[in-house]
Image (tube, rainbow, N blue to C red; front, side, top):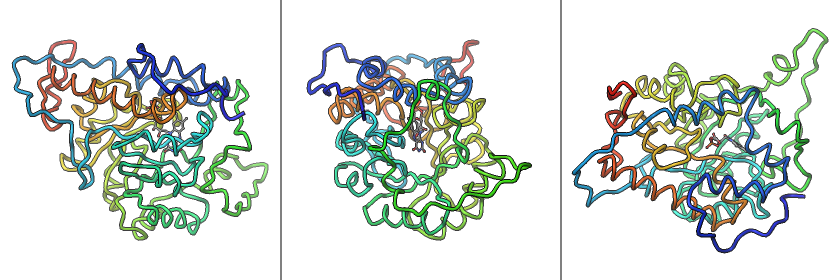
Length: 372
Ligand SMILES: Cc1cc2nc3c(=O)[nH]c(=O)nc-3n(C[C@H](O)[C@H](O)[C@H](O)COP(=O)(O)O)c2cc1C
């Protein structure tokens, strides 16, 4: 079964007011193993929990008597005007929670930029056909370069405007909860955009070999692959999954156009730092003009403001888009984004920041009362 079969809402109950409300309601719209996959993180959940905990440790000064009549959430991102600094993060296999998967999500995204996963369960051209807003394509390097290039060419031809190359999961830890719940991809849901690639012959392992090092990591991308990719396309390329400032410097040095600070929503390295904690050092390393996005744990408008204060140009949200999709399809995604944007506007108005540029580290309050 693709999802619980419960009909999606076509009108919204009055008490659906926050992203957390969507998360609570979504559980009853999704089969338990899919829920375990979607909500889960790797290992002990240290990185998953750190994302939320670190955001909640931050507080924002309530500022008074600031003129906000001309306020706006609009920004320029990669040379384009966008209405607000929130994007939808790449999430694979969305047909697990909605029969129309990523196509329904794209319809609900309206003017929000959507990053479509390599592991999408709908053809990337169909998603482009349904999207009204800007589209970026998230690229996983494939075992063969010609396969990777085929994906890039399809994304270019379908009108995607940027590539996001995800680098933080050359090994994908299985979530413990998903394993215990017996999660397995049903045959009816697959990563259709890579389905035609001929399987690569598996690396032959000796008894002395490690499945991880000599097996899985044999296909892991290297810096040379980044150089190669840079030479293949004129689309802007952002690297996703950065936490260390040296990696950020290396990737920008290789000609990439931006960095996404992320720990994959706590689904990669179990002990990775909270994305919000890793962000300031990356901004410090790259300087004020670099394009830096962040994701991981963003659930409220104040969270968006905190991330911008600590150096993000924009943020992405992951799980909440699946929650909204599971509950009410396109309508849910559009509503969830509207809620978040309104929360951001309220947070900006109350913190005395009429524009995104006005949001700085000085907006943040530390417990000892010293602005950070
Ligand atoms: C169910 C699920 C599937 C995901 N699939 C992908 C993917 O295909 N590609 C990718 O780069 N990141 C993927 N991610 C990571 C998200 O893009 C994003 O980094 C993360 O969800 C942000 O954290 P949040 O869920 O707390 O907002 C996935 C995350 C989840 C929860």
